[in-house]
Image 1 (cartoon, helix red, strand yellow):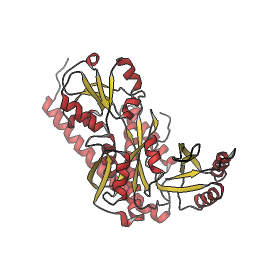
Image 2 (image 1 turned 90 degrees about the horizontal axis):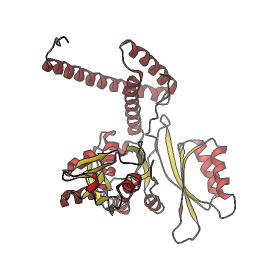
Image 3 (image 1 turned 60 degrees about the vertical axis):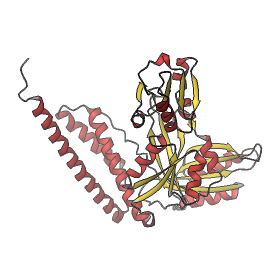
Image 4 (image 1 turned 180 degrees about the vertical axis):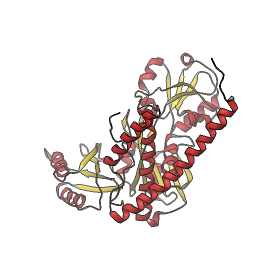
Length: 389
């Protein structure tokens, strides 16, 4: 085997130089995407152009092959770049649409302490807005909402549903009574690990701390452990704090590996969720609703109570179909104090500013016993376009 022409140090220097060049090019591309957003204000074209994205990706994949780059590798990189470009443009357009909401610092309430999944979601959401956070740690979903309602926080971040464990009912129940509006959403990958404070083995663990949701999302792994005691905490952050304090080889926590580092914990086993693709959708609430520019895709959430007659729910849902409005979520929850009465939570793809949504809601108001819009907000889940690679 011939010796490399460069030393390891020289190779690393070249790799670092290329990395810096890549960062500079990505920054230049971001600036150009902002110019694209400005031009679309003049032309009133939507931010996303799926057909152009497909053509672009197919050409990049073909060009990548000439450089011996794997198509999946090229596709993954440019999906990330396109996603960043779309979200960057959306954030810019939303700042122009809602100038009164512009602020360099936001007070944000969330469940748990530093490193909880809600804390990570809050940081990621506002990082996209270039907004610094004053973090307010809460002990319950109800407190997250109350802190915003009484003016001690500007925003609250709440988990609403998970791909593994489904809807988070406690949050839906709180939304029945709040005066707050939904102003944003973010979908966060949830990477559950078994975290310990000391070196140990999985078969030694006797007690497992976490919030009830991670316990539910990792139920298959927990069954494989046998008779392990499950201790419920108010958040994953509280669970990690407790395990760090105990320093016992027989106890562990379920949480995120990077968050565990904040508490001196190390992952004993990774990937313990029931589903490999485990994501939680979080909503962001505030005292005032926002307007969403027509140039970006929007989602509207509302709650309604239909009549108790047969077919009343179907009749209401047909209104959405007849107006060509796509429903992405339907959740029912009991109305406290009214036995057998249900409140329905509905997510649709649509903007409250459009005539279509206004007409649909007017019709639903006539059909239902009660209806309330919880908010219209940008869709921030940028689905990758499909191409043949």
